[in-house]
Structure formats: structure tokens, C-alpha cells
Amino acid sequence: MKKSILVSAVIAGLSFGVSAEQPSYNFVEAGIVKYDDDDSTKLLGNFEINENFYGVASYELLSEETFFGDVDLTILSLGAGYKMPLNKDTSFFAQVEYTDYEIDTSFGSGSEDGYNLTVGVRSMVAENTELFGEIANKNIDSSTATTLGLGVRQSFTDNFGAYARYDRDDFGDDSYGVGVSLKF
Image 1 (cartoon, helix red, strand yellow):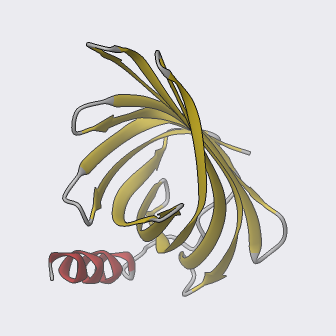
Image 2: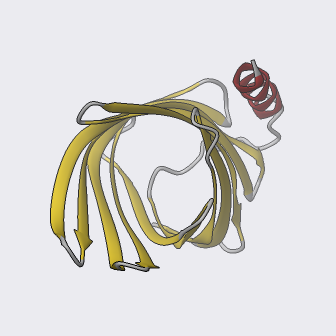
């Protein structure tokens, strides 16, 4: 119920844009993600292939010191997406990614893989301000999680900006991300 209210509010808010420009799908972002108990470093890149298709890649490193030793989780994702304009400043997108999870501990290492399916809406609500909302379904071997993400990208120049995002999964776990972005 809460998810449907949040999604409805985001979609309603995204439909009142004042800019005549679609969001850019050519960017690189670098930032930190704060999970309930841990922090990670994340790199994300999108690049337009043509008017409707784009590629996406991300790398995330989460490190934690525990009583039993260091634990490092590395997440690498590669995929492609489809985008289509909903109006002059708002676009719908859908993307699929292959994701590889590598874990290294003092006791050994392991690997699992899976895929992510994401759908969402991005909108330029002002000349330099983009809002976005998305729902992602992450499938890793036999585990599945659904995540609702909301965020903002603010441009300070034609190419440089910052972003902030909030995500909540169906297990009740929250994460917050902030970072810088570079459009090309």
C-alpha cells in the first residue's frame, strides 16, 4: 500500500515539468551509499546507443570490518535499457542488467549472479533539476527483492552536477545515496 502511494505521488509530481528537454541518458556518477549498517562506494554510467536505447554499467564496493575479519562485497552490473518520451520533459524507461556478486572474507570467497529488472520515470521538473522514481526487481540465484527508488539530480553547469537518492526494499531495508555526476 505504501509503495503504491509513493509511486502514485512521484508519477503525479513528475507530470508538471516546466522544461522542454528530456533527461540525459549520457552520464557517469560516483558516490557513496549508506545502508542500514554499512557504507559502500558506487560508480554508475549510462550511455545512449540511439534515440530509444541505452547501455548501463555499475560497480559497487561494500567493505566491513567484523569480529571475524574483513568482508568485501563487490557488485558489477552490465545491461541495456529502453526509453521513451511521455511528454516534452518526462521519459519512461525499462532496463535489464546482468549482475555479478563477489564476496571475499577471511575464510574464503564466493560468487553469485543474477539479473535486475527496473522500470521507472525520469522528469526534468526545472531546467537544471531532474526527479526520478523506479521499481527494481533483483534476482540473485534463488533470492528475489523488490526495491522502490526515488531521487533527484541537480545540474550546476551543463556537464557537472550532484544527485541524492533513497531506496527501500520489500524487506524494510533502507539506503541513501549521494554523489556527483558528469554528463557527456
